[in-house]
Length: 206
Ligand SMILES: C[S@@+](CC[C@H](N)C(=O)[O-])C[C@H]1O[C@@H](n2cnc3c(N)ncnc32)[C@H](O)[C@@H]1O
Image (cartoon, rainbow, N blue to C red; front, side, top):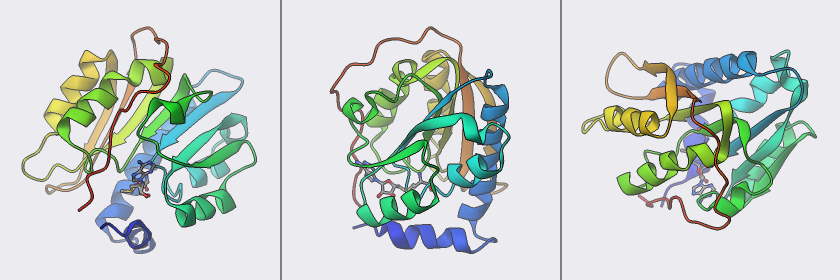
């Protein structure tokens, strides 16, 4: 079984591949916030962990104070860590992020984070989740996602699924050697209503 608390420990080593990935994710979150219109910015992060990617960005970005939203995470200890760093405008919800029920009231979001998910779920769940992005994002909103490029590298397929969903890629940043990759894109299609209680993905425990 995965120990996700231990997994987060790699963030404490600035040389670790996970820390390198973190910098790329945070850069894409900053760019997403730069693109938002004045006023409230809605954020949704699924399987948010400790929120190590987005919470420091909110604390430093000029639009950070405009952000409201939700981090959904299953593990109570990781939720507690995220809560201790989250501003009051961001709820940390302990629960299963794999169903659309976890998203109700928090979508359509301006910024959607799907980080640390796609390497842990079957390909058909990835496809289903990406196909649901138009129900999770407002038109013009940004999705930031991650997936390893290790063999067999499925990122080309993921990128084409995002394109099929109406998401225009704004960035794809990969480690120099097969390892982490971070993608980002903007929903160019219309946002569609969310099915209220549909399973998008389930983690496959290692
Ligand atoms: C690889 S970590 C990614 C954490 C964070 N998104 C990041 O990139 O730093 C995966 C996280 O998903 C959480 N998780 C696993 N299954 C989940 C589910 N069904 N609903 C919500 N969170 C889940 C784990 O507890 C873990 O914190």
